[in-house]
Image (cartoon, helix red, strand yellow):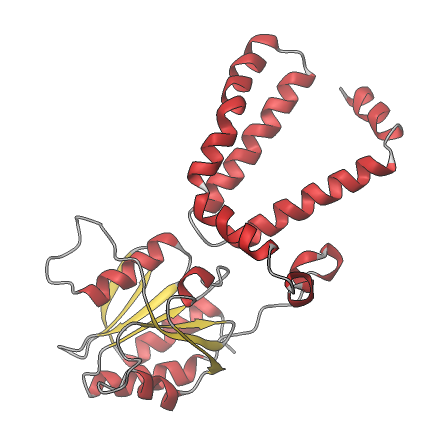
Length: 265
């Protein structure tokens, strides 16, 4: 098998290099769309399955190759069904006229961001949550990790402002037109407000949880985001990650949790 690989490598043509490059770019772009979501595990599993099938074929294991090939033959239909939202978003992105101009760092491999991501400025968030807790102002903040939550930011009003305690408090002020919904924090920026989130359908959640808490759990079940909830009834602060809700945090505990999770300076 090694000799066959070396022989193929020697006879590699320019068109083959271009072919491999384009496939790699497409896979990387698709990975960017689904990173931080549950779909990434399916994506990696499919790639691993395909690699195993290729190895089996190279070793001429006919029976196993035929069995795996049967799954591969219908795999394209399965991909369309499983990744329908991601494929639609990917095609929409490709159809954007300024796609390459706006996303150079994500398109060319030699311009990937190798530096550490921008550290989250947690202190305005903690200060705002503390003040809203004392005044019993309901709030829901979603803080992104790897997934940039573009599918959810499009459901609300775009802000794209620096993180500020006063701005967060004004958004969730009871008479504010933006208070109903979630605020998305992406890349150390307040990206959008009044965003609509998926509500968790977990049947094991306590009956007393309202829609705000269920939405906070729902978004963390589908992405790697972290959510902060301030209860309008009790003023209690809750935090949710990976579908697990932790209630009754103090301001100090919230700050410590965010510092540890985002490695804040």
